[in-house]
Length: 367
Image 1 (cartoon, rainbow, N blue to C red):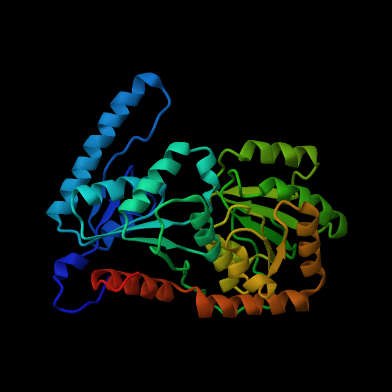
Image 2: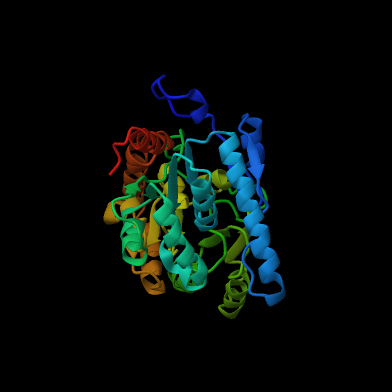
């Protein structure tokens, strides 16, 4: 919620959530909090010739409904997240003559190789936007290099989380129910959906080297199984690591898993700014992460965690083994990580930065 001068119509700051396609896991939470949720039902782009025209007509109808919603609710600020919403929201916002439009860039731009139409349309969304938020310096520079019409519109707002209030633990908790980890076994955890760009195959290769040095370790992959899952399972079988690398799937108890973790690995190669890394930092856990995207910014260029060249399984293994064999160093890095997230990457700080952006835009101070 924004808190601005009473000279501004308070209706402008009643929050509203618009989902371009379908509601997600947080839809119910928003509704329970009294935030109106509107589902637009966008069906996406298709390459099937017979469906192209019907999809375009459906998309245009959805955009006009979106436009009508913005007009009826007298929306002052439209802030869109993720490519689909940025494109559709910017178009609907301009048709509705919405006062202020903000689009967000949350990831490196590699995905555009598979979605050339979005690459083109996102440039048009940039042209329609009054401001563009990015969540890391790495994303900012990538956007400047690969996109058009960014001008002086970019504002950096780092992701934030609610840090764990619990003090760092002397030793990990037992693994939560459903995780087949014997008590006392060091757990190396990676939290990320199993999809392209997340580096799971690099971690499997690294695990082989780690287990040669530290045979008692168990690796845990937490996240929804996506396109990469089949190849990950095949690589685990070929390496003879079944029982040593566990796929836990999507879990609602990630914090309990982190409390049971000894070292966090994060080999993702396309990170904008990883909330999974911030969560691990907030628990004071030592982290070995790929030197990619916003990871160096989160980990203070290696002061609050170990950075390794993206895709280098041997370097990832050396980082993990080093932390397992040197608990004092692991504890120092974990403490530095916890302090950094508390100082720099909180939800309160993130919300404050967004509020300042809105205030600047509405007052004509931006740019």
